[in-house]
Amino acid sequence: METVVSGIRPTGKLHLGNYFGAVSNFVRLQQEHNCYFFIADYHCLTTHPVHVDMQNNVKSILVEYLACGIDPDVSTLYVQSDVPEVAELYLLLNMNAYKGELERCTTFKEKIKKQKDNINAGLLTYPVLMASDILIHKATKVPVGHDQKQHLEMSRTFARRFNRLYNRDYFPEPHAFNFGNSLIRIPGLDGGGKMGKSEGANNAIYLSDTPEEISKKIMRAVTDSGPIEPNQKKPEAIQNLFSIMKAVSSSETLTYFDDLYSNCKIRYGDFKKQLADDIILFTSQLREKISEISDDEDYLKKVMKQGAEKAHQNAAKTIREVREIIGFRN
Image (cartoon, rainbow, N blue to C red):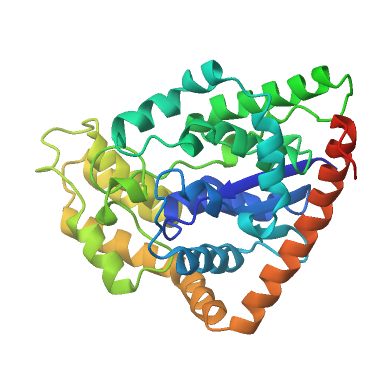
C-alpha cells in the first residue's frame, strides 16, 4: 500500500471546484492507500504573515473535509503546525537547498511580482517546506495541480540529494498522483477560468453556501444575448455553466437545455434557475453535515488530537532516523 500526502491552505472555505477536483477523490483514495491529509497553516504565513482568522479558517477546512467523507479513523487528518517535526525537517532540508534553484522557481517569480513588499525567506523556501510535508511521511504519491508540479519535482530533487550526500537510500522519490478521468474541472461563474477563491467571492459556489446565496450567484453568472443560429458553438462563459450542470444535474436535464441551445430556444433565466436548484439539491446533504459537525466541538477536538498523534508518531520516526543519518546525537 503506497503512502499519499496532500495538503490544503486554510485560506477560505471549500467550493465545488475543490470538491470535484480532489476532495471527492480523496474519499475513494483513503480506502486504497495510506493517506495523510493536512491543513497547511504554516504555508499561509508565506503570503499572510499576520493571519486575521487562522483558527476559524482551520476549523472550516477541517469540518468540510469531514463532511465530504474524509474518515479520520481510516486516513490521518491533521493540522500542519500540530506536528513540529515538519518544521525540523524543513530546517534540515534547507541546509541542502540552493539559493539559485529556489530563485528560479516559477511560482517564486510570480509571487514576488504580486507581493513586492513581502518577499520573505519563507516565500523563497516554500518548495522546501512542501518537500518536508511530503518526505516526513516518506510519501510516494502526491495529488498536485499543474501549478505545483515544479515544486513536486524539487521535492524529488531534495530526496535524491539527501540520499546522495549521506550515501543512504532513505527517502523515496514522490511522484504526482493522477486521478485520470475521475478528475472533473469546475469552471468559475465569471465567464473565464477555473472556480476559485482568488478570483472573487461571486466566482465560486462554496459547499456551505445557503440556497439563497447559491441562487444569487448563479443568476448573476456571466451569459450573452443567446445563440443566433442552430448548433452554434457555445462561448466560454456559456460552456462554463453547462460544464457545472453536467457535474450536478441529471443527464436528461443537461440534454434538454443543450437541445434548447442548439435550436436557439434557450431562455437563460430558466436555465440558470434549473442550475441553481440542482446545485442546491446536490449540496444539501453537505450543508447539513457541515452544520452538524461544526457544532460538535468535542468531536472536532478529538479528531484534531487523534490526527496530530498519528502524524506525530510517523513523523517522529522519520526525524529520529534522519538525525541519525546526518550524525546528530539522538
